[in-house]
Image (cartoon, rainbow, N blue to C red; front, side):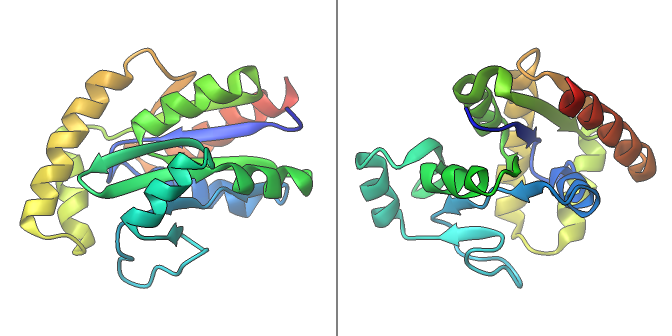
Length: 189
């Protein structure tokens, strides 16, 4: 493997994207791996920035062509995955790849990249706080929030012991400091 990989996973609403964006601002050699998804863009999301937005049909074609490092059908016809071409693009520049993926994707990426990867699970301080964060976004329907909460409960149980490090995102300043410290140790190893 030509480079290092940092994997950040969490249930939706736990704060992984906030942590990843913070680290991207501190380390110029880090580059965000843009995942592919078959879901529609939310809010101001742009194709090729937050995600590569493709249809479920096209996603299935890419799966058949073995174009993914990992992928998952999270909900019916709602796929997420990491394109092999995205990994190659970032490593060709000599950058460290940063992944912001769901818990199952994080476990799969760690298995794929092995010792070249460091995986961090970001957890909410409580299930109640997670629900408040999801509702505070104002981007999802009540049905979608209930779906995300049910999935979060499963993800937290599934993830136990499968990540290199677990970080509870309670106070953002502390979360940033702890994530920086852990990442620095991995990069120097």
